[in-house]
Length: 111
Length: 114
Image 1 (cartoon, each protein chain N blue to C red):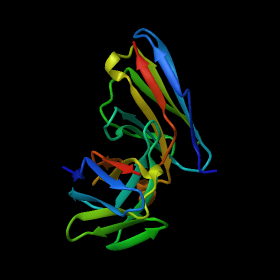
Image 2 (image 1 turned 90 degrees about the horizontal axis):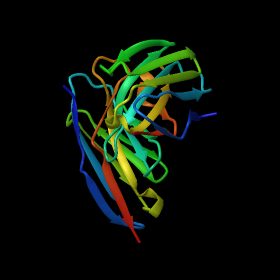
Image 3 (image 1 turned 180 degrees about the vertical axis):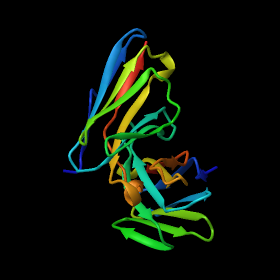
């Protein structure tokens, strides 16, 4: 089977840097995606890593280590609007298009 | 246009009602998805359509019936639902194949079954 582990909650202050980790166990691996979901809203795609290393998109970066089955999402210069749930996800090993999501990390940014 | 639209935004229905959820995208995506999401939980896949053909049914009860009339539209027909079916129903789309990790979600329909 496939499973992803991520912390359930993270709290940080405005302007700080926070890292949300995700470890995965999969029988077949294509890449790791990250999605953001605000309360009452829809998930929004943030990033995708297929290869090892760091991908940067503005204040958000995502890292992958395939050998460690580990990735993280790094949020810099935190803003109040970054308070949301963050999900890591992998594609099903059967390459069917099914995404397997982690349970989500609720990030609370405090003033 | 990178938007997926869904109607209605909210829906309240009784257990004997029949209703339909609608989803539309004009990004030329040929893979479309229905997800169900309960509060504080990740989205849970229900159906996948690839090139207008049903490719995945995650053992969803038959009271949920998907339909893909064309490459831009996806419907979910609801009949004889149970209160436990109350949830946020999300539609998503993506390019098929290697790009399926990048899915664009609609705002969802918040369904309450009484």
